Length: 210
Length: 210
DNA sequence: AGACTAAACGGACCGCAGTCCGTTTAATAT
DNA sequence: ATATTAAACGGACTGCGGTCCGTTTAGTCT
Image (cartoon, rainbow over all chains, first blue to last red; front, side, top):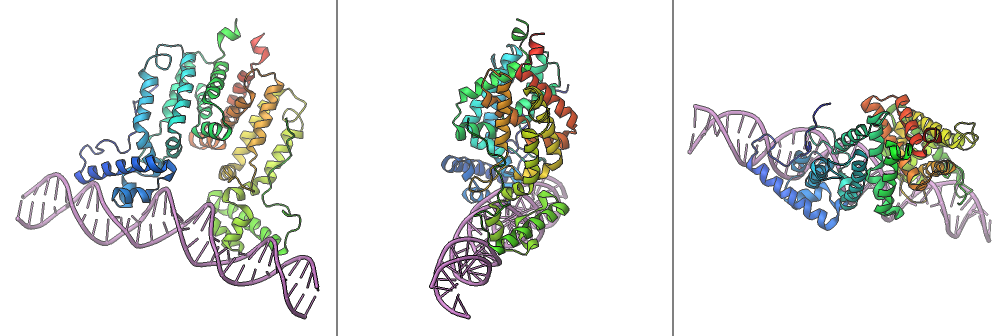
């Protein structure tokens, strides 16, 4: 298994070619500031690339040069909170972080993910499909690996890669948001169902061999 | 539980207000013919509403009047095969249709669904989110119910509605297509993983109490 | 300071889905 | 036949994401 680099995302945060031209840096600041303002007052879906360019006092081409696409921009806006989330389940305290049993970490992971989507829903949704290019590296791949590892840790006897993919699909932001906003399902109920699902999937020994 | 009407979809197939004006009927035929031709030669993603209107020799407004949206059009193009699929799992022979045990029907359902997505993938994808209006009634709701019923039949002790939703998410066309086309997973492997998943979820008695 | 160059810039431009509204027309009533 | 009218029509229009390419400029080299 190859090593997983921490936080593979960061479309436009640090100096990309190691030295960034001053005007580029200035415009990046302007753009991020303007983007946060627009999201603040219009919501994520109210942010259009034209409006962003105008608000930042910058040409439209510059916006796309920097972020590649709208999804890439959203990914950038999310990168801090995503990184924090990643850090918590990779290095944080149990039961989310290492130190707890795999099943418990899985349960905690789902619960936290649900809360995360509740909080950043709009952005997450808008960031979902960043164009494959030299931009973006969506965080989803990391959860997938994470879930797969935890399944293996629990001695999952099956197809851990695909099962991890299936479990990830279950936490899809669009599904979660539809359930919560459209069907008035509570986050607690979602978390309970997730707990039930993963428990059955790992085939909890306490249940199977009482 | 309220009755489920068979084939709630059919945006523009039959005479809608029971008597359809002759020019409307004529244009509907033209549009469907042109749409099928375009999909044939350009694929689903190559079909644009402008091109369709032109090819059919019809104004753009007419296209939208008829189908409501691009997704609505795709839904219409799919309606025959969708109806056939529905008929098979609702009224067809076991193990897909009634007569088999719930778990076996679930397994068969997933396998068939996977094959279906392999075949009509592009269209299914393009049809995914039809606008909520007087158009469309996406088939997804029906599968959800179907899965829920089968879970209950197996004596599922949990939150059958949400679990059915989670299992549906697992069969999401976008996920399946990404897996097959992007990661070269075979349909067989997908079906096997689905089988594994639902077996664990219903908590197969043969496994739990050997 | 002046020349050079690669990078950054910006806005006109494109194709697309979807809307609006003035015009045409099929069916019906007289 | 003619008048009426509700429905269907069609294409100009909007707003969007994304691209292209000629122009400007920051940093460097002499």
